[in-house]
Length: 443
Ligand code: GLY
Ligand code: MN
Ligand code: MN
Image (cartoon, rainbow, N blue to C red):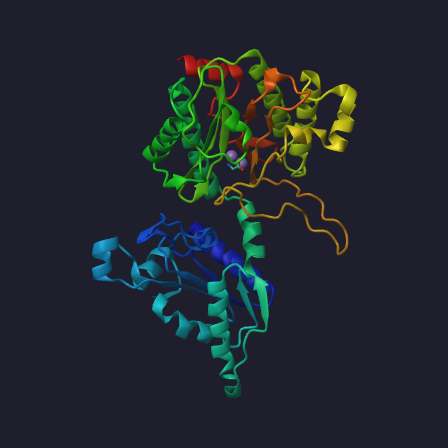
């Protein structure tokens, strides 16, 4: 069975277990950028997860009834439009190619959907995710209700399909892991390329161009998110985007960039000296962040909690802040005080990771279920989950902070697949230690 058909079957089984009904999963709309130029089209991740179909104007319908049905609504063949915009499958070929039970023109969805919804106990869709979908559903429900005197009943419950899909997407199958490994390899090579190209006098956009070149020449369709290339002090702006600042000798450059390959994201951050050699103060902070990352990686294994990596990294970072004088022991007290009081937040203000998958900040609950009223514990890691591990230190000038560290921003980010006995760093090919980075940049 192809992976998409397998996933549809798993969703249908879960819908049946909840009493059955009709699931409606549209793909993403096309969005105009300006005038008649549109943004590059990117399908909806949930829709793609269940179909593998990348055309716009499509909706998947799953019917969990007496007999399960998988139905695609998509654009019809259109010779004229295909001359301008390219090939489209059309319902017949799409049904065959994507292994669905039936496919219809998207133009017929308003007549077909009420028929499918008649007498179904529940609707499964992404509640409140799109006013367009909400309006469509209202119209379809009203069309079913109009037949009430003919003895037809309308669905009386709405269930968020994302509860089912998020859980499924959180644990990656072998097919997904294969793609994610390739995405990680491409991104690792792009970071190495940026390191090799770096020199004083270039601008941030020059390194961004090297990243994009490496992504695209390896078949990646898009960057998975806006690339951060932050020279010198810009590294302390967490959501900085590649701009036109000059790379200066003696400063660091932080790159947080990842390609999207076949709908899966990668997410790597590396920080390296513009001219290839770390200064003493840069190296001191870099080694702390690297040790923090190693500690988080060691805590990333099945049975551990999602936050164990963060907690492990935090201890190393906070101890490093005390050892280097970033935090003054006489003012903030011991390591335990720094963690309890949150003083570390002056230099480390984000968490150590997030789920990674089709979306860079991927779906999936960060908490385990708990009995009603009880606090939900953080998620227990299990094989097949993929998360980033990305500690950092960002030093803005401030009174009492040694000026040797001012404007240094460092983050080190890798993508980890939880395995049966630990984790596998998918992004291991990106140079990371001081020695590796200096060697790549020298070579
Ligand atoms: N690049 C986005 C993130 O690291 O979360
Ligand atoms: Mn990340
Ligand atoms: Mn990142």
